[in-house]
Image 1 (tube, helix red, strand yellow):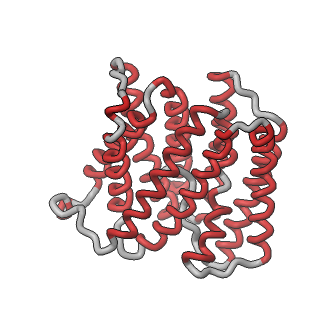
Image 2 (spheres, rainbow, N blue to C red):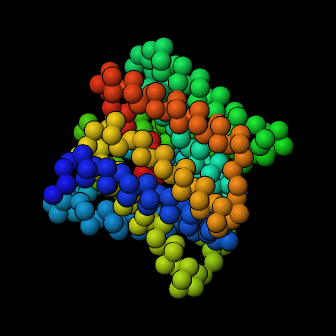
Image 3 (cartoon, rainbow, N blue to C red):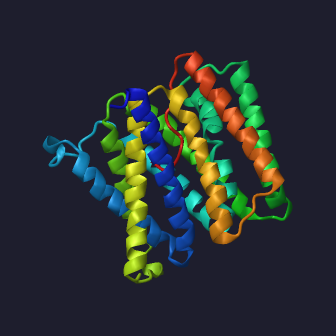
Length: 294
């Protein structure tokens, strides 16, 4: 029988694997309209959450006293999701994953304004190191006017506000409702893109597109279970396995070889995130997960 920490470690590993495979499929799906891919991410996430919600809430699952905050969480989450999907389609996989690790850096800054938290010297130092890492990674992109390097940063900004809003919502709202509302928002928003042309997938592609929704849904559930069962300091570093997966998938599928600058910048971003994590644990403040797409 596994201990709680061991189970938490296993759930985090499964979550990272699921998110990594989802990224892989999103990058592969570039020949399908973005809105259509978003639909599969949202719709099959909705189906999953309906299976896990309490039976007594099936008829009134939509009831909430914090509709405004749910709306903002969904809006910024949708912006973040669109941004990361665009980035995955136009940049090397390892580069996108590296920059996405900067989300806790922006969360630290946002927490000052939205949660009135005090940020000390070490966390400000971590923020500075993280920004240096982002500049090192994106410098070739900005130098050659490659606008797509902006999108992973937009993702980090959006996801950072999402983390703050989830911290606020989770004090009164169940986790499944927060995630369900987001999946519903993705589904509804994607339907407005139908007039711009959707492509009829064959059976194989249909299965892969459906997996985007299921993988995203399960990844978030496993992530939540991981933090529920085990110590944050034990399982959080596992999320950096996503960079290893990104390098492996990018190399063997798309012949992408990460540059020295990308690896150096990623190292700084990861190091800064770990400093923030350690300081949060030291002050007994658990940071909400900003690992990926909800």
